[in-house]
Image: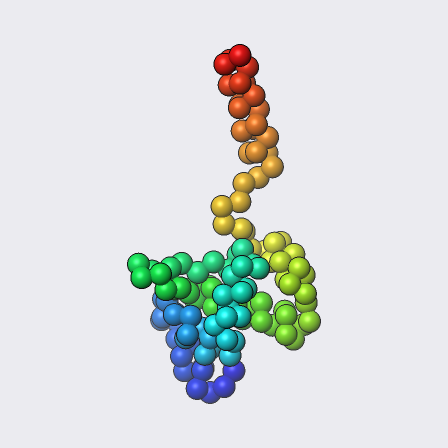
Length: 113
């Protein structure tokens, strides 16, 4: 990270635009957008105008992904697996919950027969 990008990382900042994240991480915006499709745990919110709004946590995740891919030479699948152990996926449903829903739906189906 160059000196110019370090000054853009402020601990009191709550949100960053994709261009700012691009500058800080020295990654092109298209790389960040691609990573969003590959890593479900990287999911910046969008504001009312549809612009991506990254949080400090999102920035930290991007830096971790960059380190794993570029320095530690992980594959995309390897990064997914590594984060799957430590970062909860948004909107994930447990197998137990799915089984319970299935059981209740079968009960409803039997009632309707």
